[in-house]
Image (cartoon, rainbow over the protein chains, first blue to last red):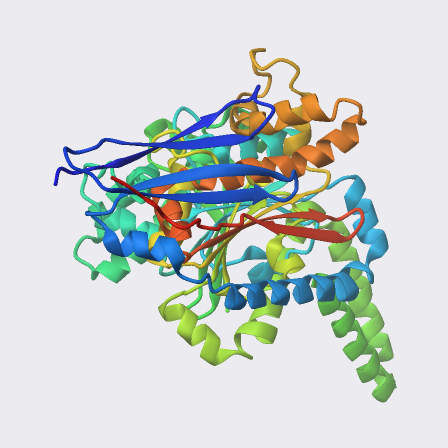
Length: 302
Length: 258
């Protein structure tokens, strides 16, 4: 039987007044086909309208899949337990923290004035609020894979929009880029070939940290892979800090002394936190040479 | 955290001096010196570093060292059940509001908690942040949390004309991902105040993101197989409420076309 790929196209129709999204599929049919059509309905309960998702599968190709999609009872019980648990957690937060600090939350509701912008990894083990004790209102926090900062001139806008908002609108006084041990994103960067495998999202993103990989390979290629990764985790933080200085409005504020840039490395294997600050004056000389940044006030907390 | 540590220190000092009152004069001189020194310090920079240092020491003493089994396991690998998209806003840390412990939730935070549609180059950032937890860590739940007083959504609603030149280069480029939400709210809620429109848009934008999640094949395929559930939420810190809703999937019986 000829291959019958399924295609999905997502169209956003802003002027449509009947449905927010139409997800439509087209299948290219082979000479003989036996289609099973499964219709998935998605009510968005907030608006009480439904989105129709039609999945067309060729039965000859994937009978198992169509069977599963057809009639298997959906085991929601376990899933609902998880969300009952979430409800209890929220109510506990409300009772123990929110109501006890009502005035503080009320002030926060009017405006936030965080002193920090934190750029950390999305890894479940490195939440900055837990590890560094940031309370609500303390830190505007961006979390992405491998805590990378793209350069001003190129790359996706997600992190850049957060930089623009926190630095120019909220006027944060400190930017802290936090890396960590055993980072999956950095590992992916160190393992990949020089050419990005275009099928991989992860590679398409971590290539932003390419310079850190190159500098690591230049000095640490004789080390065990795990040690190379650790070297790269730290090198990547410094490259991100250097990139931050490439944003004109960030450099301006650092020059004026109203913004400080810090690097942090959380090692959860031995529970230590290393921290350092960018020495802007000393970095300016290095910038002309293109050899990175100078740092000061390095310390390790353990 | 830092207030606790100096209060504890002062308490301990007070207890010591009440037992050893002959140390009173020595203590007074030292305390005066310390106070003078602290007054002179560059209060901004030192506070910032001291702040995070004391936060870390508190975490290490009260969490890490008290849960060695958990942290030893986490040092080897993570298996979070949740992938959470939340706003970068300093007031809405999901681990605070929902008390996620370390290891429970892979958390992505960006302006206005948005998930853009599938695009390998333009949105490799979010794509990677989805691909890794879903295909490598096998998370079972995705939760997109919007919130009250969201600056990103307010900025989106304030954009008058979709084709106007951008004033803030990166922010507008990013938030226009949820332009369909804004257009709908402007149409359906034109009689509401700007503030109420924004609240509605905060929730509608979550729905746009939920829909965009389905444009990623590895998400869709797991949702269809019932291995992944998708939910939206809205945290209102003015009223102290948390709304939660889900995309509900039902399959109708298949019929053969032949």
